Image (tube, rainbow, N blue to C red; front, top):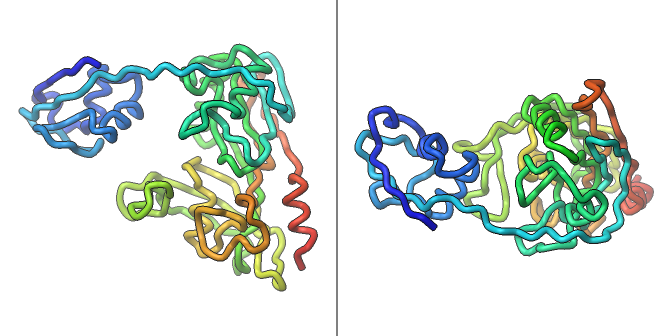
Length: 304
């Protein structure tokens, strides 16, 4: 891995460290530059700084040039529930327990491995490690995902995701009786400073995160509420973090909240039931739905 050194010029002074390195071609994206910084592959004046560090004239920046780690994505015959497919996109209803893509100890056996078996070519613009993937949902969350077969579709769908015009709606069973019939949660999310495996609502350094929810049914005898949530933004664990933040963690969630696994202890009861977007080719709005999985229905049938 090549090591490089630069001295911050007057033109670079005042710029964020990650933005400056990206502009200089240190990595193909700002997120990858940020990963380099977090992995301590970048120093400023022999110190590790944060991605948002503002460069000063004369700062000496040392960094290891980014190289993409080779990853062999296996094609595996994994059963898929394909809701819709055409020449540009695949809409799939992911089952709970299935990881979306390889990583973090999951080298294969993922949704992406199954998609590559079904469709050998997926949009390369999404990256060598995650071809075709426009967005993700957690391993133990079930529901709808749209996958791009080509770069044209990927760019069109990604723009909608960034512009908040792709609507993703979820059913969630949460702990406690929510008093409001509907509300907006506008609270920034970042890495939990107390636990690196978790995310949390944070006062500084968090990313804009907005969730709208509507109460569908309250179960007073069992002390829980069924809600529909719509994401405006799409942060990691967003619904799980936001519902915990307002005191109503998702039932079954093994990571967030306490005492919320008595009704169900095999992962969070969270299901992406509706996905609405403009088809990148036809320019017409399309909407897809996926029914609640049986295990979710079984829990609801026992509540009063």
